[in-house]
Image: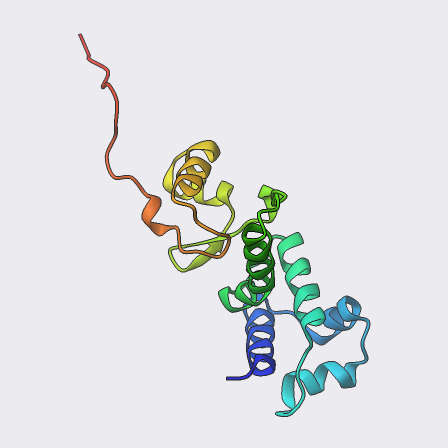
Amino acid sequence: MSNKEELKIAYIEAIKANGLNISTLRLLHTKSKNVIEKWLYVKDRYPDFQACYELYLFLNGSRKTVPIALNKIIEKPKSHVSQIIRDMGLHLQKQNALTKRYTFKSRLMSISDIAIEIGSTYQGVYNRILRRKFLPGDDVSSIVVHGLRGRKKETI
C-alpha cells in the first residue's frame, strides 16, 4: 500500500468515526467542496499530509476520537526525527503531555483518560509508561497492575 493510500484510508476512517460532514471539512482545510469530495470519492485523488495533520489537530483539540491509523501517520515523522536527534547525541525537547496519546484496549487515549479507566492517578500511569519507555501511539494495555500492593488496613 502506498503512502498516499494510507493517508486516504486514515482520513476517511477519521471522518466516519466522528461523523464529520463536508462543510466542516471545508472550514477546516479551506478547500472547495469539489476538492474534498474528490479526496473522499475519487479513486486517484488523495488528501495530502497537511490535510491529515489539520484533521488530527481538529480531532485532538476538540477531544474527539483519533483513529489509530491517523495517529500512526502523524507520529511516524515525529518518531523518525526524534530517533535522528537521539542518534546525533542531541538533547530531545520534551513533548507536551496533553498531546500524547497511547493505545489502550484498542482505543487512543490520553494518560488522564487511561488513569480514569483503570482507577489510578495520572502520575501512576505516567510513571508506568515512562519506566517501560512507551512512545505515543504504542499499546500500553499491559500497564494495568492486578491487585493491590502495600499494607492493608486492619479493622478492629
